[in-house]
Picture 1 (cartoon, rainbow, N blue to C red):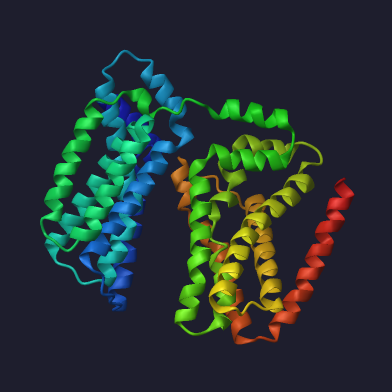
Picture 2 (cartoon, one colour):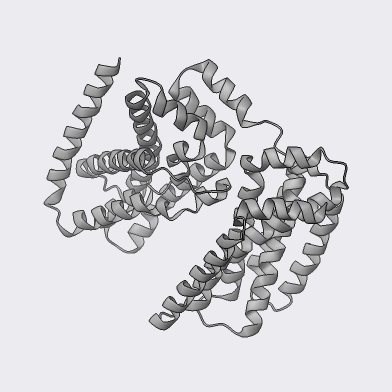
Length: 405
């Protein structure tokens, strides 16, 4: 059972001949060598490195465990007569290998290339990554006891922050990892199985018939998307403080560009193949869906921008009319570009949802917005031109809305 489960999930995640694993390791090696020979050096405290590796690995592992795309395979395997304990450890081991070798390895390559480290520290960071995998799996299996598991996770984070520069922190993580293994020994395969399938969700979606209901129900169904949106709101609150620290409010357009990084809500077609098929084949759905999707993303972006402007006004009392127009422009432009990417270049070569979250395409729109913000800062005379472009886009959107009514 252990061998069969491992092969089934490994081929799904890494390809029939594990070609994806070797390709990712080669890319990590190229990234490390390219940054290393560039001679960049950054002072990174051991506690910061440990916290980065642990938080990133645990987050990716949690996304992998939460993926709905493994529900079918799990349902079939759980029906087989087997020891659920063997299934749990096999399932966690494969997802752990996927997380560490395809995601954490990239971050580790970057950290090792730009910082000063000792060989023994590599072993310590690997221990941190394995501990994060076991910790995330154990906490995920305790979803019914979310209060106790949240306190457990918070205590480990606090220990890393306070003891990150102590050499015996690794011993603490090893002991906690053994404790996580003991919890997994008592876990059942159904603790990792998503009870509500996407099919039932699609039925609920079709009964409502409203795209706006679909968008908001989609966020409600994917709690991690809501968490990411909440994090962006928190960034919008504290971002004016850093602008005040550098003493330049001309960087406000950069804030609008940074707040366009809420990429999980920009992959609805890529992650929902049934929705994409319906939108592309049903008559009249192209304009209706795309315009509604643009307005939904504009609402998400504009909410973060409004929080940013309110925080800026409270801290600096310097919000101008041109800043408000710039916020509307960047929010709308980011929404339009994101929908165009989803429509013409959807992400298809992915295995589980974690691949969507970390796909390089997610950076295209934010980088474009950053370049545009830099152009506005360098040439303030460009702002009136952008305002004219904004007015044209608004008129076109209202015209399309009027036509489809």
